[in-house]
Image 1 (spheres, rainbow, N blue to C red):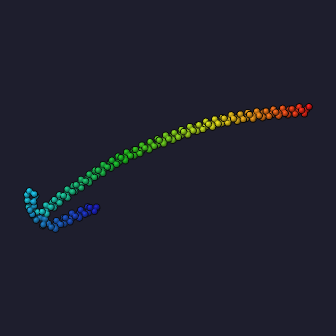
Image 2 (cartoon, helix red, strand yellow; image 1 turned 135 degrees about the vertical axis):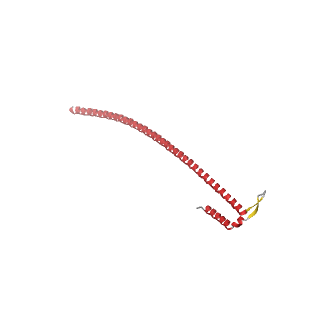
Image 3 (tube, helix red, strand yellow; image 1 turned 90 degrees about the vertical axis):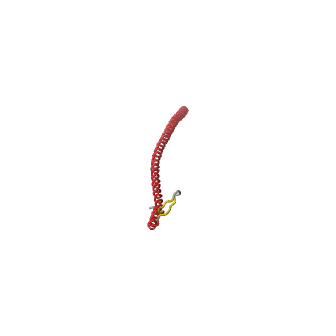
Length: 166
């Protein structure tokens, strides 16, 4: 039980005890002025009735406030749930969009890698062809030089044989 409720119950019990102890004084009739007329009535009972009416009014007011707060809470809970669903959908769409962007980037990177690989292979093929051509030219030059040396050697050797025979 909350402290406010406990204090309110203690105050109401004290008022009820005070009225019970002084019941004869409450029931004593007196002249009461209503502004336009005077009447004879017990002042204590009139005051207790006004206090009871005030208590009933405040109870109705508290019930109204609690009911309106309950309805507002339910309304806010529904709005919060719908906003949470919208946020979840937005987050899902962002993840889908992010997945698309990442896949497009990976595809673009893969295409760039493939193009780079093809360019590298083409360059390597070209260098291989150039190397082979250069090797063939070197081979031909070397063969020609060796042939020339053989011819010189043959000419020199046959010239020495002719000199030796003479």
